[in-house]
Image (cartoon, rainbow, N blue to C red; front, side, top):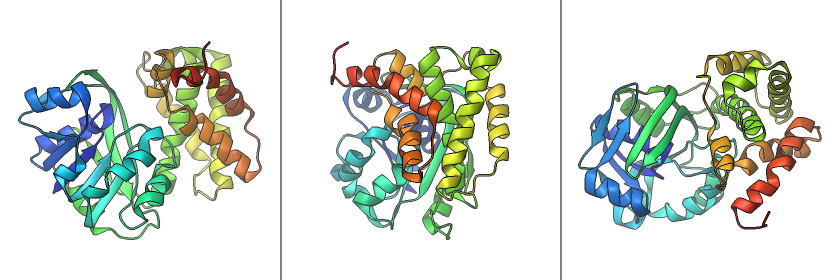
Length: 312
């Protein structure tokens, strides 16, 4: 398959790198020092699933230079999705599928608003990774997993071809779930609770889950997100709360969420797409989410400072 990774950061770099390692015709769309390093020295990935280097690697900052592809993996941050959708128009052909891998549950609708519903799938991934340096991705934990599918649960030949491509890659588990919306909300259940409390407490997940007070906050955060999902008619079972908490208990004790790391470092984060989205979607459904409201409001000034909107 001809595949473009739009945003070759910690997520796009890992999953795109695995596809390239497996022999797929893959091009990274990125910019700056990361782009230069990939063009000059290839993409280097460190992982417990096996280290590798994609060299030579195809990389460009101009989607028009690449042209139409069979599939696009969208790896930019959640707040960049709408702008990225406009930029990726030259990559869209008659049979292209577009897979968002962002944290949150709104990326697919944002892509549809620009590109139309035809090419856009629902998607998600699970991985703990980060950019260790230009052209260098480090996988730090969580077994890499990617899932995608049509939002209306119908069959997609493009999705099936992409699943087969991932199945040929090492170090990735791939799935087309029966209900991608339910799968996306399961991921959202985890990441919004973990990221918000991690950013608020500045603590790794091992401490958060081990202290009775913060563990209770974790449970409440999960319960509030589940209530919002049900209010929006997502078939997310109540058992997902306990299952997510069990998964949290299995994480490396020093693990941190990407939003947590961004806020602590003073970088723009996905606050609006995670805890902010919980608050916004709860308001639409007419329900209360007091803990997520507290998390969002407590972190908002830091987010605004990171975006140069206020000075603290």
